[in-house]
Length: 266
Image (cartoon, rainbow, N blue to C red; front, side, top):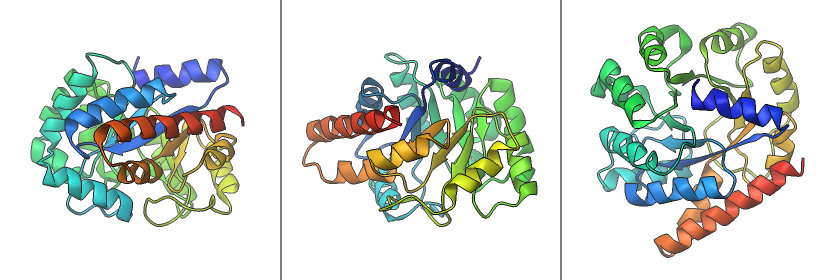
C-alpha cells in the first residue's frame, strides 16, 4: 500500500487530520531540506510536500518564487532532489510528495523519473500545469511504480472538471481554497465550505486543502472541512526571518507544532 493511503487510513481510524507542510527543496540547500523534513515530522507533520524549484512557477506567489530562486541559485536539480529523498529515507518513512511543473519531468524522462523516484522513496506527485486529460503517459508510469498522482481542483472548477480530477487522482485530492497563486493570507477565503462540500459529493478519496492557510486558527477551521491541511508560504516566511540554519530548523519546528495544536483543537 502507498504510504499516503496508509497514512490517511491510520489518521481516519484515529479521527485525526493530516498536516502537510510544503517547503521548497534546496532552500537554502538540500542538506538543510533533509534536516527540515525530519524536524517537520518530529513536530507533527504527517506528509511532507517538497517543491521542485522551477524558473517559471505560474501557480506560485512571490514567497515561493523567492524560495525557488534561492534553490536554483544553489544549483538544485530534480536529480538532486530525488537523491535527497533517498537520504531522508535512511531516517524516516514519512510520505513525501513532490510538487513540480511538468517540464522537469519531461526533461528527466517520464519512465526514468518515475522509476528512480520510486526507488528513492517518493510517494506522490502534484503537477499543477498538467491537467488530467493530458496525463495518461505519466499516470501509467506512476501506477506502475505505485506513485500517487494527485490532481488539483479549485472553486472555479466545473462539476465536470471536479469529477474528472476525482476519478484521476490517487492519494488525495488537492483542493485549492481560493483563486490565484499560493501565498499566506490574513483570513480564509469566503465560500470554501460550500466548495469543499461540492468536491466531497464526488469522491471518497481524502481531501486536502491548501493555498492561503497561514495560522493555527486557519488550520483549525480548515480541519473541519478537509482530511488534510497544506501549509507552504507561511513556513517559508518563517524561514526567511531566521539568521542561520539552526534557528531556521528550530523556528520551523515550533511553527509546525503550533499548527498541529491548532488542528487537534478543532
